[in-house]
Every structure is written in structure tokens, then in C-alpha cells.
Length: 114
Length: 114
Image 1 (cartoon, rainbow over the protein chains, first blue to last red):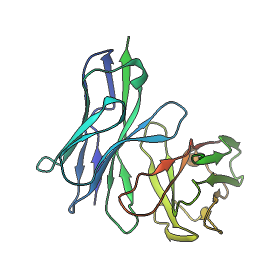
Image 2: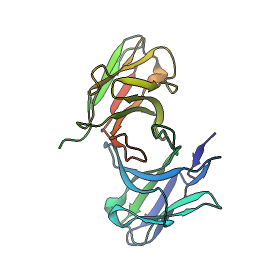
Image 3: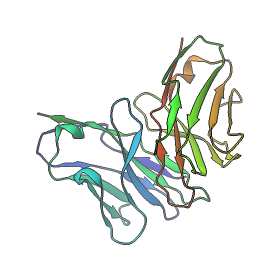
Image 4: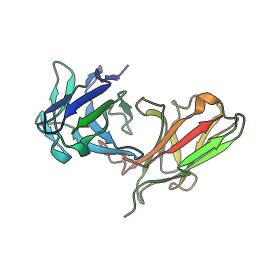
């Protein structure tokens, strides 16, 4: 069965410092990979997605992620965070069923410290 | 164009009461998903609609949960005889349904069962 692991439940980081949020997945078949962000009292919003091709994917708000097939990872990075990046971040796997059933990880809470 | 909307945003129910949660997807979106998000967790899949057809309801936790989308647009998630463990945020998402799609999420309905 497919699953998504986000090892860090909470990540505090100082403003303008770099950050990496880790995501690992398990699947016996190829998948699509996503990162979503959830701001307080809002719905989830897509940051970026990997479908195929280049393993380095760039998203909105300066975020990027790198797909590593051998390590089954899809870590999210940003070189310099801003206060407004404080939010919950979810890694997700699309199992490529007929209708794109998505499995979400438990989330990582990013807190940017001024 | 408007995004996905959900109503009510907050619902307090007494244990045993029936509740109905509404989702208005983005116009023209074929696919509609319902998720349950417990506190501090990632969204968990409940059910999927393609137009008016409910193609997957494997995530519904019990037969007290029922979802419909009779005209292929607005969807309602109904929970009968609510229990305290039903307390969660219920998220609705829609997509074009063309494959490898970004899902667009509503703000969610926060249900508290007392």
C-alpha cells in the first residue's frame, strides 16, 4: 500500500534562513508527487508538483523540490524563508488511478521566527 | 471565477444529531473529492465523484456517512447520528478530471460534535 511520511512534524526556522521539509513515500508503482500548503483557516493550495521529466521542480513563492527515485523522496526547499511562509505543509502522492486518488502525509508545521 | 466554496464554515452538533455539509466546486470541474482532516493530521480521502457518479466511497468510515452529487455540480456530505469521533475538518476539492490534476480545495467545514 502507498504511504507518505513527513519525518518532521514541526520545523522552526529564523526569517531569511534556508529550510528543507522532508517527504518520503512508499509505492510499488510510479506516482505523481505534490506539495500543498495550508495557511491558517484556509484550504490547501498547490505549491508544486512532479509528473515527469526534470527531477528539480520549481513552484510558487520561491519553493522548489527534488524528486529522488532511488531514495523515494521529494523534499521541499526554500533558500530564504519569510514570515508569511508560516503554515502547514503537506506532501502528497497521486497513485495514478483512473481518477488521481491522492494520499497525503501528516504534515509539517513551519514556523518562521522573526 | 470563484474557487471552491463550502458551507457552513463551522458546525456544532450534539451527539446523535444529523448534519449536512455542502460543497460548491469550481464550475466545469468534473471530479469532486471529500476529505476528512483530523486535528494535526493530513487530509484523509473519503469519497470521489466523477460528475454525478460516485465512483469510490472506500474512505467513508461508516454507513453513517453518505455523500451525493445529484446534478454533477454541488455535493452534500451527510453524517447521520453524529459521534464525537466525527469531529474534524471536512474538506472538499475539485479538479478538471483530465489526469495528474491539481485539486482545488475549499476552506473546509469544521465540525464539532459535543
